[in-house]
Structures are given as structure tokens and as C-alpha cells.
Length: 621
Image 1: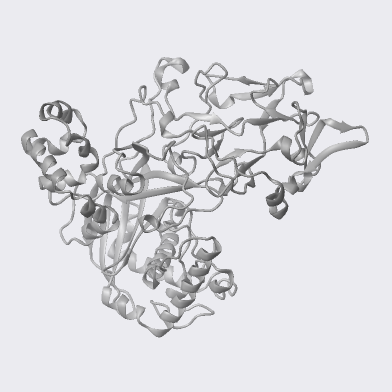
Image 2 (image 1 turned 90 degrees about the horizontal axis):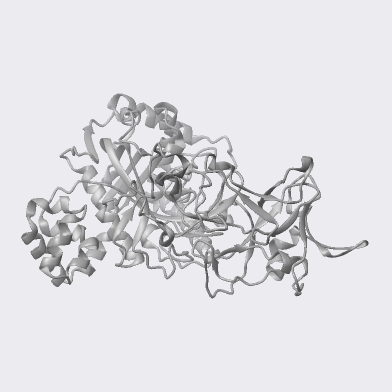
């Protein structure tokens, strides 16, 4: 954040992973005394960021280029510089992710004042503290209790629209019921109850009020149908870009810090080794960064190319061969073929996980384990212990009010707010983490036979109708239901995550899933990954051993048979309420947002085992 003189002011600290999952570009972050919005990549300064490095993940970069354009050339970690002996005035103190004050309207926290005004209106003063950035705050000169200047807190309500725009609440427009109040008026935001509900909060204009005629309005009028009728149209403001766009869509009042104020749109992948290191294939994988060299002269490329970090991948071939491969790739006009492979992030991972030859690299190490003895017909074909893996996720946009579609690259972007003005970023922020995991491969024949059963097809018909109704209610384009196979594997992964969390020592929110579910693919990867770490302690991998895995799977399936919310959970009809799940709830299958790749959609215990309401379509029964 910057002060009145334009100098940078540090207001707090966030973990790198939070800048992707919780407080990314466009999100509002609540610091101890101020509220700020994270600015777009165009505002990020890397000149002092010794720790901001380019992350090499060609498959993810190619997938992002399909979404954002061929101008995207890099994945970069957030700028960072470690503390040094120079104190709070050193270079490290000026390094970080830039933010701007939002909302820009503040309210005096003294209960006898409650004055509401813009931060730049002259009523509030910013007090900074380089030695304790978290104490940075605005104060009001009303001299409250004890003649101390009370802290000015962010205004409690903001406006948003479905296209991702965010704006300050229209305070003067609202209290004066859409009329022009003329010169600036004195406003207060009074809480007249103890519940904190919007109906107990009143916006008052002191300038217009008279002794027996207060000009005020309850904030309850700003919500629901009443709010949609009286609020002005959206101005198209993007505070993270400091721009206004043409919009005009209806606005919605939101409470500051509401969970639906920001939903990230991310793509992620697991790094797998390149077993075929042929030069043409390597050039294709790094084509996003090599494309710009094709029009250059040979001498200019000879001077620049060896200076780039990616040159380590090409050094063994020599410049002449690399230069020839770049021109051959450019002349082959292979962009269309690359797009097909780039859109599939799962297939290379799947091929490597089922490969009978184990991998052993710094980023991906696997070991095959004997399949445990399990009751019933054989369904588990392969167990792979991934003792070392690297996960990379990138943020390419966000939405507000409603979460984005969870279908990855199969879904056309709708309501996506851009990271930069013009929606043509040249680089994308990312987070890198390392950890371990367990991969379970289902028997294809057993799974295909189950999918063809009549009861399974009938249950899938209910879920499909609910899926179509859910999308229609949100004016989304119709898309295919992911299928019974996905619902089964997804539900199985959630049930096993809960059991693994009890045994491994990891919190359930720290165990993530990767679902491989389509024709020819049937498996789940459960893994844990920690940012800024070279790995974990093996607690998850140890659960995949033959002597432990069988009992854990059996216990997970037993727990799935009965939910503490039954019979309500088991009897839930997805078609009646247009839900994307069947017999599932927070007590049995729902997982943390950091764990689930689909936002707790497409889950159903009935596809796993017999429940109180559904008999006969459970895969394990």
C-alpha cells in the first residue's frame, strides 16, 4: 500500500500459497487495522525481488496459453526478499505484493461518532509503523475516549456484480434515495442492535436531518429483492486494476470479507519426468518461451538464449542444433497439435503413474507396492507410492458472487475477471509445493461392468438431471455430466482422505486429491504438499504399504455406510433441489476447499456402498 506521498507502506504478511488460494489478485485481504485489495501483476515490481523466480512447468504454461493467449511466457513466484541486517528500511522491506486500500470509505470506531467518509476526504490520517507493519492504521481526529484518536475501520458493505466488478457502496446515493445531495454531507453508520444484522445498521445523513426528522435508512434495504430494485447499475470498477469498464449489470450488496467475494480460477499439475528427451519434443514443451526467438537473427539469439534459465535443459544439445529445432518447429505450424495435448494435463501424469518402470527424480519418485488383499471381487489393480512429488498451480483469473465452473479446461470461461487490464498478461503468478502421495488404480474391467448395471444408470440419470437443472438455474451453458465413474472415484477419494487424516497425522485440509476418471483412466492420487519445503516426513506414503492400506480402505467404506445426518443425508434427492451431489454432506464426504478439486460437487455415497435409502448401486457392495 502507498501513503499520501506515494511511498510504499508495508501492512502485513501472507504466505505464498495464500496469494493463490485465499488472497490472490483481486481479493480483499483483511489486515489487523486496514482492508486492502491485491493489485494485478502489472503493478508488481520485481526489481528488488531476489526471491521471485521463474517456475519451469511447460505443460502448465501451455495450458494457460490456451486460456490467456500466446503472449504468456512465464510462471512466476510472488516477489520476496529475506530479512537482513538493514532493518525496516532495507530493500527487503520494500519488496512484496502491492496492494491498495479497499474499500476507500472508512468509519470512525468510536461509538459516539461513527462518522463515515472517504479515506482521502481529509477526516482520516494514516499512521504507519515500519517496525510493526501490522499496526498501520487510519485514525479519526474526533478525539474520542481519553482524547485518543480512535481507529477508523473499513466500511462494512461493498458492491459487486456477476462479472467480477467490485466497488465502494453508494452511501450518499443510498441514504438520499437516489437524489443528488449536492455538496458533501456528513454521514454516520450506526449500529442500533446487538445482533450485527443489516437490519440493525442504519446509515444517517446528519446534514439533512432535523431535530424531529432524521434522514436515515436501514441497510436491510440494500439486500434481497429490495436491493436489486434500488441500487444503481454497476460502474464496471476493477479496484485491482484501478480501472472502470462499461458494465451496467445489476449490483449486489456484499458484506466485506464474505466468502463469495472472491473465487480463484486455477490450473495445476503434477510435475512428471520427461522420459523421451528428444530435442524436438523438448522444444515443443518450451515453445511458449522459445516462440519469440524464431523471428530473431541467429547472432542475436546466440547472445540471448544461453542467458535464460531454460537453457540448462538444452545445453547438452548445443546452440546450432537447438536453433535448427526452433526453426523446424516454427515452420511445421504445429500450434493446433500442441493445443490438443496442452489441454490435457492429466494424461501425462496418468501414463507416468501406471508406468511399470519406477521414477526417481528430484521432482517425482515412485515405488510400486503389492496390492493388499481386499474382500469381494478384485477391483484394485495397482498401488504406487509417490515418495516425492512437485505440484505447481497458477492463478489465471477469478470470479465473484458465484464460484467458477469446476471443469478445468473443458469449460469456456464465463464471468472471469482479468488479472491485467486488457486481459493479456505476459506472466502468471503461481505457487510451487513439494510432498508425497499414494496412487490407487482401479481395474478397468470391473469398473466398466459396474457402470453398465441398470441401478447405476438409473442413479446417474437422477444426478444428470440435477446437473442440467443446476446449470440452467445459473444461466450456464449446458455441459456433459462427468459420469458415474468420476462420482465413484471422487467419493472414494473423499472417504479415504478422512481415514488417512486420522492415521497420518496430517490435517484433512492438507491432503489433496487428483482424480483420473475417463475411458481408459480410473484412479485417484491422494497427496500432501507443503510450500517452501523439500518434502514431507513420509506419513502419507507409509499408509500405502500393503500391511496398512487394506484395513484403511475397509474402515473408510464402513464409515461411508452410515452418516450422522442420516436419514436426511441418505434420502437427499438431488433433482428436487438441483444439487450437484447425492448422499453427501459435511458429516460424511465433504472436504476442505484446499482438498477437493471440484468444490464438493459430484459426490454420492450411494455409488460407494449401500445406504439407508439406496441399495444395489454401490460399487463395493
